[in-house]
Length: 89
Image (cartoon, rainbow, N blue to C red):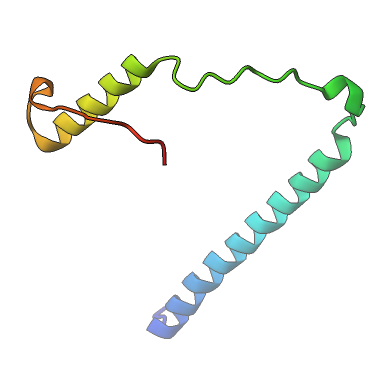
């Protein structure tokens, strides 16, 4: 039996779209089931203590990591690089 090229293309595209629609439906169903069966926790027990903010606790390690990345990108040694300042963007 000889199938035409148009038939083969339409069957392939149709199969892909049917598969994608099935995946979307399964993901939607799983999301709905997860939302339905997740236990609701009271807001008072969820409170998380705020972590202290440390702005420059490991500045030496950060400088070393940035220097190593720049040296690798430029193809030079780390000792050939001098970083004057670092500014958070």
